[in-house]
Length: 261
Length: 300
Figure 1 (cartoon, each protein chain N blue to C red):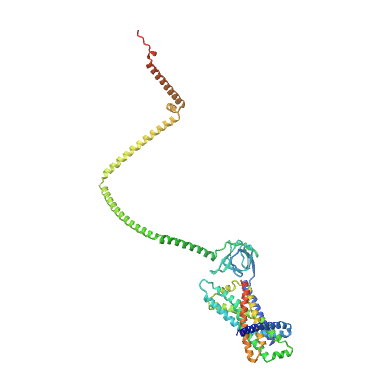
Figure 2 (cartoon, chains in turn orange, brown; figure 1 turned 90 degrees about the vertical axis):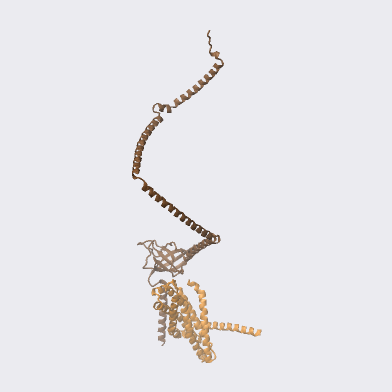
């Protein structure tokens, strides 16, 4: 019995180290593939369109609702004596520092990451990746690097859009439905603002973009066992990416939040 | 399709850049207007943060852009002031609370209207800070502690020490005293009423002719007194003149009174007289003893 437990723990530990090692080697492959720009650059623009431009409606919608709800909730939690500019201040802090990058990344995990895993996984199980290798294409440079670069660039771009839409939605709801004067909201937006808050938001978005593209591409790249394997890889990619995003969010807050003071 | 992708991606990235950079600048600089820096300095613990507002006579004119921690006990603060707002010379900077929750701002308070203004990069002197919530709470705490002490003393003295019972007893005594005084006052009032009645009766019994005659007698007496007083005044004046003459050695009496030589002569005369009398006494004694020594009577 003890031997079985020991064997299971050993297998689990080795498996975890193996998983980590395979991902590190995969990342090394991506870094190596950066040396083939003629392979990935023509495809990068298409991925940027898929990841960035096509995601604007969804990211904007989510940000708009988050901004509106934040403003509404904040307004009705205020007790007498608290200035109304607090609404603008809280909405700005919530959207720029936390909800803007985090929810954009989580939404894109579902929309872009799942699609990425499914596409690459399907190519893997239908042996299209093998065919690429046969044609002397580097599959990492051809499939992974364009998606990685596109996510790296477009996540911050989408985060800027989401932040702007969220703050504007908060302004609209504050002014139209919550009785907060526009001047008070704008004064709150500017209160104790420092440019590093935007940089902090973009750092988060960039790291979330890396996480989405790396995890989802890898999960698709190692897909096995036909259509069922594609589904399993897709689900696993979404779960791992979501958890990784939340962990990264906490780590970034841990290390960078002191610089926000 | 590829061309369209490139345009869309380019538009999106350009939009994000403009919104991101423009929005950040707008938020950080409170708009796109130009500004100029001013400096001030506060002691440690002012509770300031980058981005907090700067108020000139209550109007928001800029923000705090930089706070340097000076090891000598100061916070060197840089403020960004809107170019359209000029800060009059003589203005002082203080850290003010802008809400009950401790939000701070720098309040610039002009001394008086003037045409002289601080130039960019000038340093505004720090004024006397308004008391913070902590200080106010400390004072309130001290006051409440004092009130608690007083209440405790009152409880000790009045409740536990029996002071309240004493007070009740004193009030009871005072009430009794007031009752007694009321009785006395009533009695006095009755007596006074009777006295007044008697007085009125007496007054009505007095003959006015007699009073008139008495008053006339008094007037005559007074006139006589006036004459007497005048006479006395004249007599006093004469006496005064006489005494003045005596004291100034004028006249015989004055010389007698004030001449020391006469006094000495009189003393010497008295001494001589005493000596003479003594000699005469001894002579008489000797005469009695030896009469024949002096009287030698021969009839025949």
